[in-house]
Image 1 (cartoon, rainbow, N blue to C red):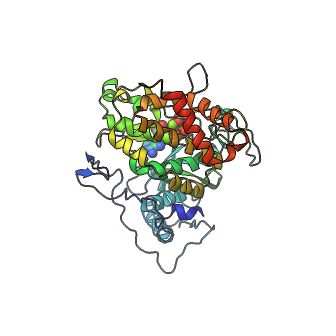
Image 2 (image 1 turned 90 degrees about the vertical axis):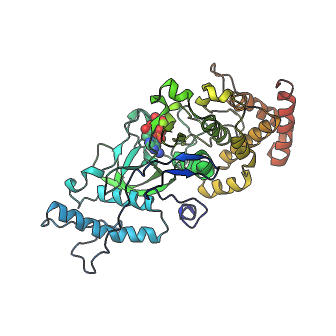
Length: 432
Ligand SMILES: Nc1ncnc2c1ncn2[C@@H]1O[C@H](COP(=O)(O)OP(=O)(O)OP(=O)(O)O)[C@@H](O)[C@H]1O
Ligand SMILES: [Mg+2]
């Protein structure tokens, strides 16, 4: 089921991150920008494997034994020739060049039959974030430049191989326990949400290409033994985190860039939109949102028996640009967002029904508010819990609609009709 979403013949855009680029570009929204030279150079195709191989296939993942008699450069060349078969196979599966390069670079990096000196320059490297989950830069094999970030599922917060013992727990698929400060998030579900964010927001909000990756990877950072891990892989976005930008740089950000993130976060319910999860690319003058493992929470799902709340975090609420009138392009995107079409894509990806209901509430709320003329700052405030921990107004209004309906709250059409009534009763008088 998943490979359909992941393959190039699906409706997902497939990036060509390796091609060189022209100086000036125009995106689908008509915005012009200067393009950055591709982070990685053109990857030249490797020759086909020789018909008779002197190497032995050692695992189902096609590791090949490198000859010990060759010089390091010849050995490396031979290794790449052997792996070119793998490259072809992955292309035939419909994977993009970026995915193929990431998979093959990781497979070679952890191939026990390829000597360390042949691969030191492209070994996956911890991103070094002070974060709470495992994340690794992935490099291409030729120029050894960063091409993406891999976040293995079993190293997510409260998963068994998290790099920090504080955030490590055994994984029990039947457990309903949700440790941590996001009650609307199931441990081990972050990779899906990273992909979901790309599917619904990649084009408009510039979420970098994100897909599922299944690769051999060390069980833990301190161990050399590898297992097959799955997780999200996201294309590397050049630039610097907003936390490393000066006040001047932040106040000079184009209003559209901030409003595009606000629209995306309001609709997808970003639970961790800190300034450290936004990259500023000064060449294209764009904001690139990353780290979406806590989007699509389910704590605002009206079908929950108790504890309904909004767990969003929107750092853009404090930026100057958010006080500007709503950017027309951002408003158009939010109002045209096709919730039915997108929820069916989210379902295919395995996003839970609770998260889908929360998503529908958020989309309904944002679209209703924008039609009333509310601005992003106001919508953001209504969606956020107060600093003293008081529940958000959006959660209060969801609970009010649920209370008005009693047992009929399970009827979605009735719920949204009532929710709209509650929104009008509560908000229309106070907004001026
Ligand atoms: N697509 C990307 N392009 C460039 N750098 C990235 C990308 N994704 C992640 N990074 C880098 O890796 C770091 C960690 O990634 P991310 O924030 O997604 O993980 P995290 O473990 O959830 O971190 P935290 O808990 O600190 O939020 C980021 O701070 C950023 O420096
Ligand atoms: Mg982060």
